Image 1: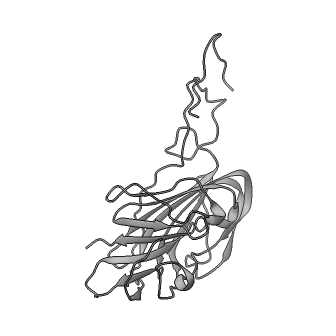
Image 2 (image 1 turned 60 degrees about the vertical axis):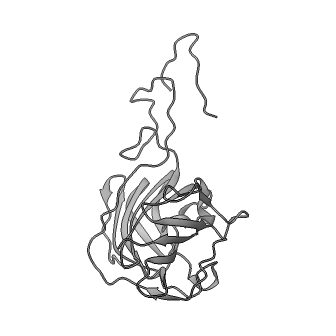
Image 3 (image 1 turned 45 degrees about the horizontal axis):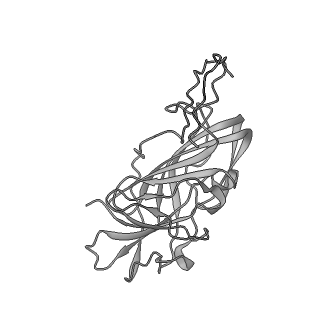
Length: 239
């Protein structure tokens, strides 16, 4: 920690129901993801921090803390361009991946879904990780070239969305969960949808409705434990 002047004080800031029939919507578009990359939640201290005392951070953050942040950009076809950031408390050389669950038993998702990840890219401590396969059809493990604490993933998530009827409607339901949720189940997790969010339910939480605020500024509850960070979305897709 950096030195502190005498007398200095520290400031401590201390059911989703869609109600319509649905058909699964999957994306065959192979264009690369183009999602925003905001940093993890950060907490600023009133005490000056020197480079030697600064905690590890992901680019774009002032003082990152262990956790997961997922930012999803909806596409017209129901797929998502996703940027996911993971900051671990200790380094790992093996990264487990876990797709969102099928929608068969989830509130508001009446048609089974088949989530699939394509165009996966992984960075570990700012170094690109070579991948044998950039498609993730189910649970998997990615070996890292060296132990790392900071992981960045970008990918296209498809097959997790069901569209409302009539077919021309842009209203949809979708399931989403960080690929890295099983890396450390207690990590605080933030899930963000950039546009069109109408409601959100977290079926693994005791209080399942996890939407905060009202459209068009609706957000999803922050700091959900990673093991429970499965979110069922109701949203309007871009036209």
